[in-house]
Every structure is written in C-alpha cells, then in structure tokens.
Image 1 (tube, rainbow, N blue to C red):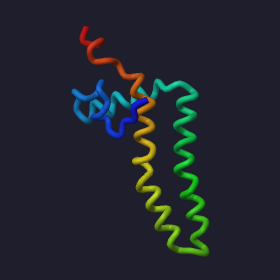
Image 2 (cartoon, rainbow, N blue to C red; image 1 turned 45 degrees about the horizontal axis):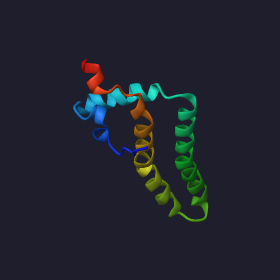
Image 3 (cartoon, rainbow, N blue to C red; image 1 turned 30 degrees about the vertical axis):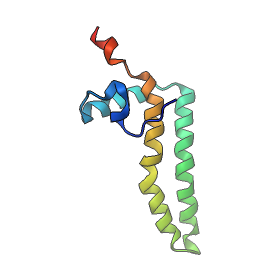
Length: 99
C-alpha cells in the first residue's frame, strides 16, 4: 500500500486542479466501506484523545495547553495521509474514464 501525503501524489488526480482534486477526494471518501470508515475514525480518535488528556493536565502544568495546541495544529498532517490512502482506490483511473 502506497501512502499519499498530498493529493498531487495520487496518479488519478495528478492532472486536475486543486479544487477538482479536493472534490474527487471527498467523493471517494464518501465511498469508503464501513470498516474503512471505522478505521479512519478510530485513527482520528487516537489523535484527538491526547488533546483532551493534555487539557485536563492544565490544572497542574500550564505548558500542557501548549502541547495540546501543537497536537491540534498537527492533526491534518496525521489524518489527511490516511484519508488519501484509503480513498485512492475509489478514484476512477484516468485512462478508463477517457475511453
């Protein structure tokens, strides 16, 4: 399984503009099977839960709020590649769509 960190890396979307790539990825994400959606949502939870744990620690250590902010800022860098990788197989091959 190849991991995609950007939509431009996906061969089926390489020739499209940014708005078209985002639209195609959203359509492909909607086609994910139930286990794939569950896997993606569990992965999202694994990224978000530490934020709440860090927020709870602010009573004893105020710097944990900075770490929580950092995790929130890095959230797309963890989740988007997983979403792109799972959705890539639901994109139509450009050679097939031209025929």
